[in-house]
Amino acid sequence: MAEPREADSGTSRASEPDAEEVLSLILPSVLDGLGAEARRTRVSAAWTACRLADERPTLGAELAERLVRAADRTPTEPLVRTLSSLHERHPEPVGDALRRFGGQVVRAVRKTTSWDFDAELRADGGGAVAAEPQQVVDAPNDAVTVHQRSIPDEPEPPEQSDASDPDEGAVKHADASIPESAKGGEDTIDPVAERRRRIQAAENSQSFAAVQLVSAFDEVSVIEPPRRGRYGHVLPSKARMEQAEYGIDLLFFDQPGEDVTAFGSAVHERLGQWQAADETTGIAAVADYGDHPRPWVATPRTESTLADRDPPELGVALRDARELAAGLAAVTERGLVHGGIDPHDVVYPAAGFESDPAPSLSHLGVMTVIRDYFDPVEYLDPRYAAPEYFDDRFGQVDHATDVYHLGAVIYRLFAGQPPYDGAYETVRESILEDGTPIPSDVRPNVPESIDEVVAKAMAPRKLTRFETATQLYRQLKHVG
Image (tube, rainbow, N blue to C red; front, top):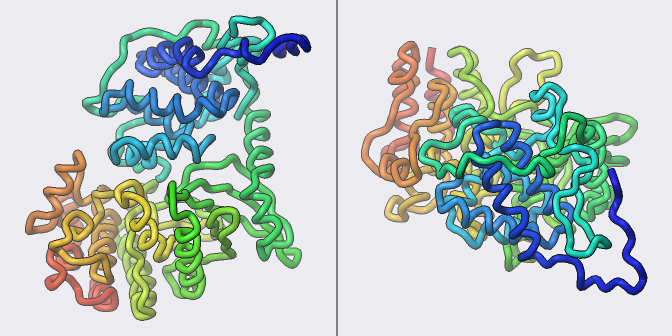
């Protein structure tokens, strides 16, 4: 690819196009591409937006805002995935931009997987989204140009629509392609080189450098590109300690726009409580944690979450329900509240020699801090949320909330789908009504005793739920 020419010493930087000019050139083509019928065109448009933000980081937030406004409050699935990719690459400016809009947009972005351009290229038979020498923005002066360069849950829950289809009711843009100059040809970026670039960028980040300096590990290295996790961005890594190597996930938490110090202290305290409780069966382990330059935690590598998995056999579902209930009972006896159990917090370790390993509860207590600084619906799947999350007439978030959330997760284990579904307001109204769904309505061979456990755990009123997680666990032990 031809590299941008160096400006002559007398050439003023004023010749570089401003943000408004760049966006006016590129945004219409990106929007048309994201709304096109052909999947390749949608991927090309998403790739163009991400490359533009990478090349001109100051445009990331403005580009995200323009995309949200163009979506007219009902964004297409490709557009939301593009916003998720922009957030993954530039979390702080894009995150700030997204939070200026309603919770609907933020929830959609956080729950949608970003574009995996490597996988898209493989699925396209080895093709790529941009030809090697393609230039996407021309400045008025040839001395300054913006080029495309070679580059690289929360996993979408299985109950969501296929990534290739727009969300139901989404706004559809005109069926137009982005220009050939922005799409490129068959010989394109090297996905291996892009993967290396993303890993190297992660290892060069200030956050990762701090972990290398202050963590308990003798050595840490990133082994996969960053991905969006439940409460922030995750670096799949390898750590060495006393000559032994471990696979770990490094989670760097999102930070609020203000009160950052207080937020960091509160998260740090919860991480300490989580680590102290992680010897309990059913609770995910904490390998290390810290609060500089932002809160982070290292946990053993996980293979998947419950949100990624198909419904297990009934015997396995019962085993998993008992395991999770035992863990919750143990931490409840310590006086701790999880506050945010849903399928994305139920993690399964790498299988190793076990074909079907038991799950654990992750992020113990983190939601009790997050909800004070962010809209909790941005992080907790509302389809599993207790009534008290929607209406304070049902009481405060406490141990009884954990019982409800675990009941909803047990429903998911046995039924293979959320207890409620639909638009946010529809879900909210359903949860606040009397009565609860039971798994056998979806999967008729689920035992009646499981229906009874779920119905009692998910009772809208706290006084009619199990009094403690220990009671719930004992009831599960008596299920044949």
